[in-house]
Length: 341
Picture 1 (cartoon, helix red, strand yellow):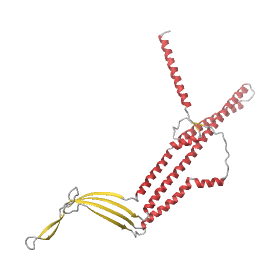
Picture 2 (tube, helix red, strand yellow):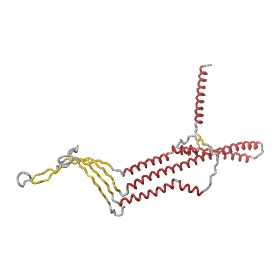
Picture 3 (cartoon, helix red, strand yellow):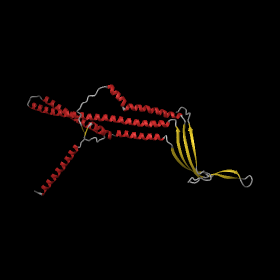
Picture 4 (cartoon, one colour):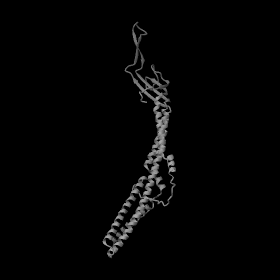
């Protein structure tokens, strides 16, 4: 055996080994294809669907809105630091304490450089029920977001079930189309034999060929419908659109009690759309209260602690107290705004 023949055998063995490896990997991948049930499909759709995740994030966002509204009941703390420089020191002219009668002089009453630090605490006491209405609106916003999530899940579950049964229906149609093609292929063979034997005319043979062509066309349509139904299923589950899909057939038929009034009452009690309408009605009531809050005066307590000086450390000077404080309870009321409120 020549060296060329030995090299050719080795290369052939390598090619066979690589081919068998790919076949085994492909076979293993086929074994790993998950067979979906309806419950599995709905569960995975809930976990991966982006619309569901968006609704969940909306609930969390409205939770922060509620915290923000609740913070309105609490006191606020603020601070400020200012520097004011005058063109010249503030003075007043007064009769001279010494010197010639009638002469006068200037007395300095303020510094040219002025520094001021203020710490403030503000506590709302009455806002015309604006704070309570805002807080109730925030809580209702969370309730509505939860209802929106429930509605999205119900709609998604319905679409997943429809897609699931569309796959089953498409697969059954493919099986029927394949059976029809096989049957017509056998029929065409028989018709061709009869035609060659002179038993039937050419028209019957052509008719059999047309029927087979139509059946093959129907099979192509059924295969395309099966692929499209699987692509729709993958899209609902946020999977790659070309992923393999195998589903479990449903062979059990369960008859439901066709009591329309009972179903209607259950829907009216449980459907999220009805609950959302109720929440919207309560939101409108709170919005009216919020608008009416402008009819009332607003009362707030304000406490200020102040340090002043003519140097940045605000430690006082001849013209500034080193520290002072004041507490103010203030009432403001716009009692006429030309019908705006």
